[in-house]
Length: 207
Image 1: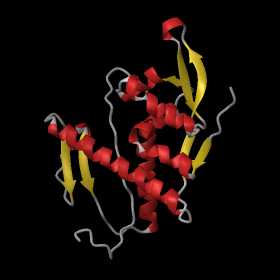
Image 2: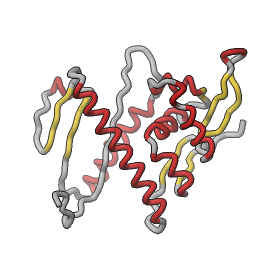
Image 3: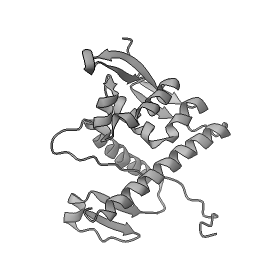
Image 4: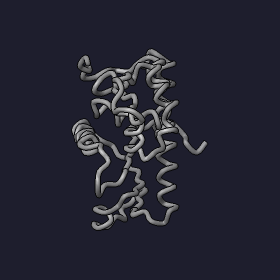
């Protein structure tokens, strides 16, 4: 099997459109950190039923984001395994391509819709360990250590050094999630979504 390129930059509409589904984004996130996985193995990591993933896998294969890596197992357990075309994928922001920007916008919107739905669902179970902050600080030390559900908004005027520090912290958070993606004993499936953005002071979001 040929070695996968280290990184592939996604910038065309055909590459970006499949990622407007959060299910397909999560499939990519899981598979790109493994050499090859069957649909059943992917489903275990996602906490999903294999039958719900077939159409998503087919779309990712058609877009060239997933590749068939050959069959594994024998007899009834034989199954096709899949791998990503590169070890990591990055999305390029291309202001000169309005259609690509629209797909990128849809990816962001889909991610935040799913994040909001899952966070609200966690709250409604009545079992979430949470501290909510909206322009204030109500977290206790214990809540900060143990919480599994959190909503927070912050805004400030940052200089170049502070922005650099903020991005370093975001990279560190990403590294935690990338350190071990396997489902294993005494773990829970946790997700985090953040949106770093410059603010347009002329925009009126109450209009």
